[in-house]
Image 1: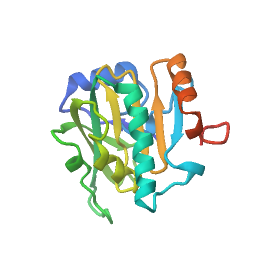
Image 2: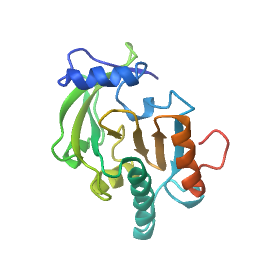
Image 3: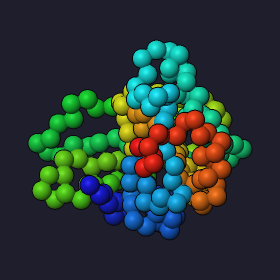
Image 4: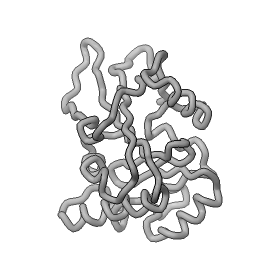
Length: 199
């Protein structure tokens, strides 16, 4: 199901920059796979295992997340977006989680709704923080994503040309062009999904 950004974002300049690069999707991670020539998916555990069960497995998945992120953003500032859900009247969130608490210094950016007038359910509140990339700086957030406690996270450069969307089981990566994507794929070929569709 598609989604759309609601009017009057708190950071209109950032929304305008976003739309200049991603005109067909709002700033929600799972919406980003619109350009297959620039997209690659990496799995976070060997044999495509989805969830970590031991500290050794958490160490492996955090290593993979941080290695690709450092390849993408070493020496740069990054935006980190997090999403929380505000339920409509009559709807309840069985397990609310404050992802913004794991995004230090973040502030409200915009709000997003699913394109379903009959059963919308909630509004997604997107916050954004900005910090200098260093391996480990978002580990608590990445671990929460890996445990499926939160979703919709995006880590991106401040020009919004490259984006990293971690999820429980791996990460979708959008590079600036196909050559960059291919170099990243080659550097971490052992972490690629086994089937040709990248799943």
